[in-house]
Image (cartoon, rainbow, N blue to C red; front, side, top):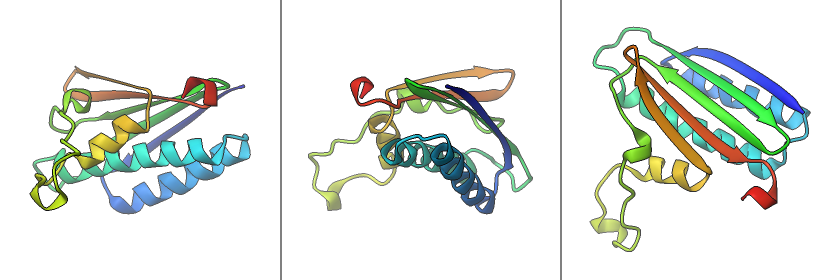
Length: 142
């Protein structure tokens, strides 16, 4: 099995909802397990939410490209945006032993992404962020 799903969305939360619904439907149609679909949508939602909320210093329309490559072993997600440079792979994880009322605000979304994926890579190329995330589709890979 080798499937490819491509999307281009604007930096608008309404489009994120459409993307999540489309991804869920597509992955379900080709037989991806519901646990893996949940992980993919969680990763997409957290990353794209951060791009929309923090990636831009203006209120202009920006395009976010999402490519999903699916094999029997894994799902590879590539997200490309022209927002502020930000390497989620290097963002420090919060100390989860800290009481909730003492934790600093922010960073939990990226923590969730790291914990629901198997590999994250980032690069900045031609003023664009390129984030690659790999999620195994089989229990053996998890």
